[in-house]
Length: 116
Image (cartoon, rainbow, N blue to C red; front, side, top):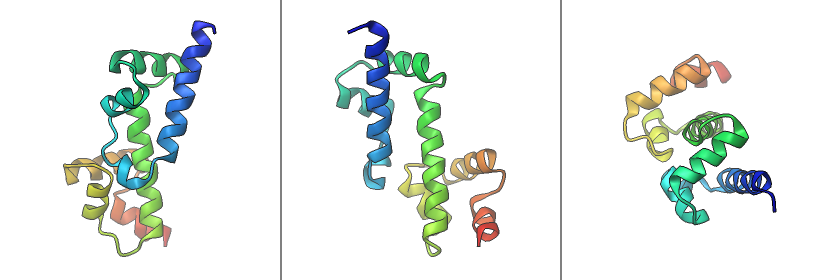
């Protein structure tokens, strides 16, 4: 198999794995856990992912966290923003709020109100 195809295969496998992860497992997702799961080094996985997707793996994971946050906000009207941050693996509640606002243009609480 060509080296380029191998990189694309690894990246596609990682993408599929991330997209299928249940929220409970996604919470602790890191490049280190992905590398262990796919039996490759963190550096190799990061390099391959960036080469194929044009973005860092950390950026992709962060975006997926924020997409899940959006879905959870819309699906569960009783989930507090603090609990949401914790469920998604953010240890710093304020960092979650600033990341969400940077990505979606509104704080999580305001976003929820606007979507109702």
